[in-house]
Image (cartoon, rainbow, N blue to C red; front, side):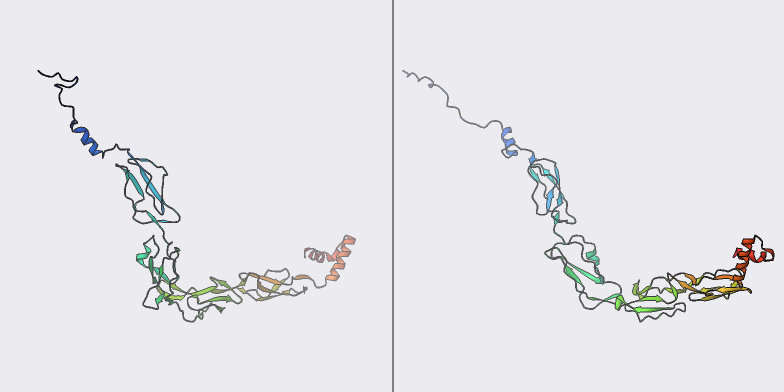
Length: 324
């Protein structure tokens, strides 16, 4: 006889096991790396000389952040300055867009930057730039002047290897209308003369300099010393001056007045052409007064006319006295 089975067992099938379900959920987890995506990037990458335009710690996919230079750094030519948050919570690769650089190289009086270095605008520490002698200067060695960007971001002092070719021959004005003095002022490229006109009016620059014009070396334009002239002497009543008929009255000219018969010159009768500003002439001298030769006598007659209210035969003389 068959033994009765224990409750719950007997013909009970095998206990349940764990088998593979449909393959779709497993494939999805494999594609997602075993964890769900957040869809955000963290803070932008830290850089030594560049700072992001936003200080946020979370950026959705597709966000862009622009970096600017900080602490006196300069943009490195050709490098982008924007990073983007990509799918997978990562930032796009961005080389640092800024770096430490010297300023534009020193401009030299005797030399110019080489064509290659002239086009650059970023000079990191250790950069070496070269110069070429300017027109009018010659190189005194087999090397070219050069300068290096130092650790403190300043330029080293380039050697003065270019010598000026601007040595003008000694200058003596030969123009016939130049009547002045030269005052020596310097040598070489600073070689020049100050100019002073004596009793003449200086027109133009009062200094000539040895200079370079194009590829030619020579003196700057010489000024002229022109005559200082006075206007025609003023006319006087009952007299004349000895300059009548003269066209030009130059500086230091003298004109003398004389009176008509029966008139007398009182004081100095000469005036002189002078200049207060070394440019224009003016007349100076004692004022001229002309009176009747017998002034005292006529004065007495005039007093008599005033008191007696008659002029009689002296009327003409009284009229002349009144109009002087």
